[in-house]
Amino acid sequence: MADGHLANKKDETKKKFKRAPNKNYAVKKRLPARPVEGGNVIFITKKTNFKAQLDKCCDLLTKGENEIILHGLGAAIQRCCNLALQLQTLFAGTCQIEVNTGTVDVVDDLEPLTDDLDYGAQVRHSSSIHIRIFRTVLLGAN
Image (cartoon, rainbow, N blue to C red; front, top):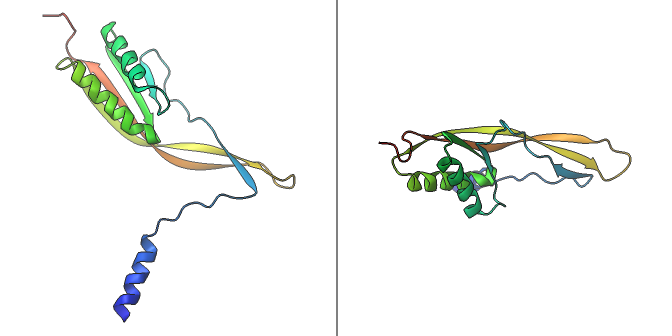
């Protein structure tokens, strides 16, 4: 009997608790801070066509860029990894990959739905990946 009670208690602690949305505020998500701007820095999103992102990376590498840096955040991490692996396959033996992972703080604005409340903000954490693809051998070189 005691074992059944402990098993139920264990199952209760395994349940994932989601944040309940506050009915007094509307959450407006801000864009995350971009680490570095440049011609060889590409931010990968889930909304952009994968083929277009792949073509942009291929164009940069074939036009003489020594390295490109891919940044992915949250749900775009898988797409960023897939893109890097596709580039490694296309430029077999001429490119290498360096991967760094981390966490980025993302700020959400809380807009009150009633006049008696103040504006606020909340910080949440999102996973990120930074992939550096760099040339080891130039194309056409002997």
